[in-house]
Amino acid sequence: MPQHLGLVALLVRDYDEAMAFYVGKLGFGVVEDRQLEGEKRWVVLAPPGSREARLLLARAATPEQAARIGDQAGGRVFLFLETDDFWRDYRDYRARDVVFREAPREEAYGTVAVFEDLYGNAWDLLQRA
Image (cartoon, rainbow, N blue to C red; front, side, top):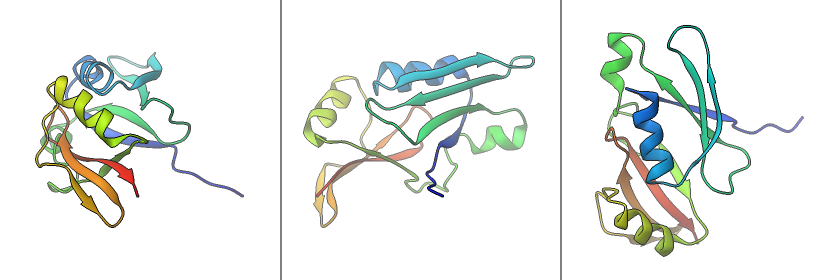
C-alpha cells in the first residue's frame, strides 16, 4: 500500500495572521478553511503545485502549546520548501520582506538558504541538485 506524508501541523498564534504570511508572502494556496467547534478551524495550506504534503495551521490552545510557537524544532530547520527555481523564489520572497538568516549557498544536495516564517520557525528554501 503506497503512503505519503499528508499534513504537517504547525502551531500558530492566530489563523488569519498566519494565513496572511503563508498566502500573502509565500504564495501558498488555501486548500481548506472550515469552521469547527468554537473558535477552532481546519485550515490547510499548500505551496503552489504541491500535490501531497500540506500545512495544517493549528492555533495554540494551551499555554504549553503557545510557548512552542516559533520553536517547534528547538531552533533547527524542520520545514523544507522545495522549488524548481531557487533564484526566482529567493528574489520574490526577499521582495516580499521574508527574512533570510543566511546568504544562499550551494551544497552537494542543491541550492539552499534558511528563512524564517512570521513566528521565527526556520525553513529551508531548497532546489535539489
